[in-house]
Image (cartoon, rainbow, N blue to C red; front, side, top):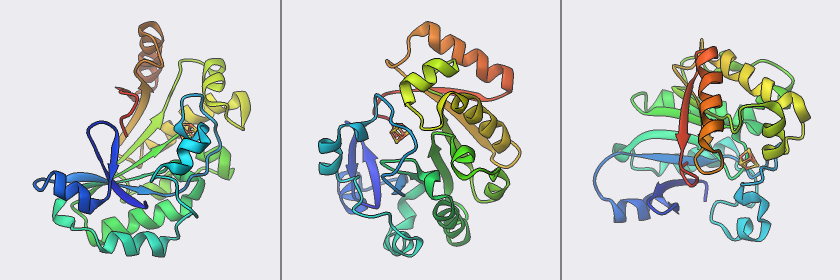
Amino acid sequence: MIVYATHAGGRYLSMEASLRERPEGKRSIYVNITNDCNCDCVFCLRSMKEMAKESSLWVEHDPSIAEIIAELEKVPWDYVGEVVCCGFGEPLMRLETVLGVLRYVKEKHPDVSTRVNSNGLGELEHGCVFAERFAGILDTISISLNASNAERYLALTQSRFGIQSFEAMLTFAEHCKPYVPNVVLTVVEKVEDAEEIALCRKICADRGLTLRVRPYEDS
Ligand code: SF4
């Protein structure tokens, strides 16, 4: 499924099914950019490969911008408040596709908010700084902080870039600040204890970043 809405209980529904279940009101819709990821987080559903492949979020191939736009053209936009680029994997593995989707949304539906959910390792992945390319097309970037230090971060994410990943993720968040109105770092409730979450709060406060503690199944 390339475009879907999320419903209570961690369910992913097509827009048609979402409107059947909740006919009124605007909702966030999610664009599944890729299964691919440069991490292998210990808590990621992708790591349970069989479950992942049976999930409706596993895409058979990475959808092209044209395929994604064809899906978005079918969406009843009166019921959409936000478009989120996400994935079963890491959306910024496909930076140009994400930028294409964001541009499309802002050109065709300027009142709809845009968000990218990311692990924040895009600069390591692409070997360049690209945050300025989000200017005017991205309202919110949600970046997984995961932990309060580089060692714990690496143990949790098993990033292919190793120990430099934690600092690179925070630097990416700082690079986004001038260009993206809302830069939000997240930690997952229950994965982290209260002490670890307090340390994460301090890291964000010191860098002028916002922390959100999110439930495990939240998107
Ligand atoms: S960064 Fe996200 S998609 Fe990638 S392994 Fe971690 S939880 Fe899964």
